[in-house]
Image 1 (spheres, one colour):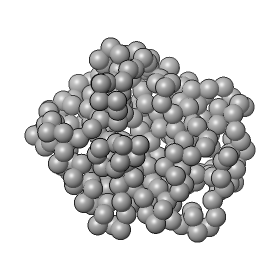
Image 2 (cartoon, rainbow, N blue to C red):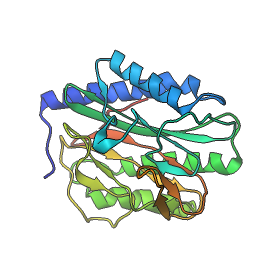
Image 3 (cartoon, helix red, strand yellow):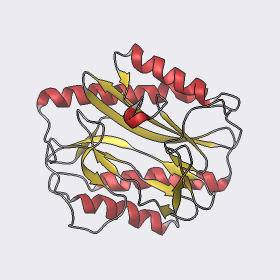
Length: 248
């Protein structure tokens, strides 16, 4: 069931989203060669807690870290460790925060130092694919319209569209109905209504769309070892369009 949020719930979701966006802004200056992903994870945890929230990812279905940190060919759900960032990496921070029982969720991919032209291309067009998906949103939009917009843009730019992982509703659960795939057909799927809150999150690969799960049972990587990027915003559906709750 897709829930329509009350005014109180929307206010709490706005605060949770603001905390997530601010956590991204706080971490950006530290995303340099030499820092460990464990240090980034700890800093994220401490900042989220300082804002009166808690990291939603921590122990979610047993996940062992506070935020998801994925590097290069890692698509999602990378686990913080003593691994150090290197010049030329791309890193995705998927940050979720829970404020008074309500969640914010936003992933963003960043360049570390000097990255290749191919990685710049991937980052640029995955971010643009997110906004192509958001552009179609308003009351009455079908979920399939979002996926169609994302997929069309991605394929025009020769990027692989990961189909095993999707966007989702957000509320007092981190993952709610509806699922929001990054592919689809126009005028199909659930119809969006004002007051719904969803996360739209293209995950696009520089090579094949195929992915597989590592032995840690969390980290998803590209099948061909090519890099992947991930951009996500949580948005509130309005009659005229949408409001981004996780502005950075």
